[in-house]
Length: 236
Image (cartoon, rainbow, N blue to C red):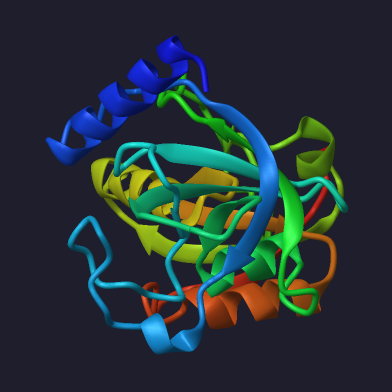
């Protein structure tokens, strides 16, 4: 290893050990695996308790709290996870993922897969004031505000998960921000104006089949007990 690479590695390790969550740009490829259930409840290197239901991962050097976009190069599926542990220490492997993250990338049966990882630099989403009529009919919704989701996917008919219905926009925005951070999936917010009040609905995920939406609901309902499957309809 060249001298400058050694110095950079030692410096990064020092900053990490001191608890500095510096934004480090990184792009890396390698093999990802996932945690065994025996680690559930144990403390990770960051001090957090490990959970198979959180979108987290272990990386050898990146600071705790770093968000990574992980893409399964065999099927193109992509998620966002947060570094909260150290490892893996098997040659050629770059990440250990939680079970729910591995399920999202669809490699649980294989046990491991080739991935590309990139750091995600948090940016405040641009927002705008929207005057929207009541677009909710029964259990169908028109998505009107979307974060990190392809436009084409939003316009197609499909399914999503409604996390909750709130009468306070600030509360709804807080729930949306928390869900985006914890779940790493597309987030949608909808304002519904009634005769006497206004509601703000928060949705997560885009699914082409109802069964996929219900499978995802099973993974998150412990943390979002009011969540339910809703159907998307294309906007006119």
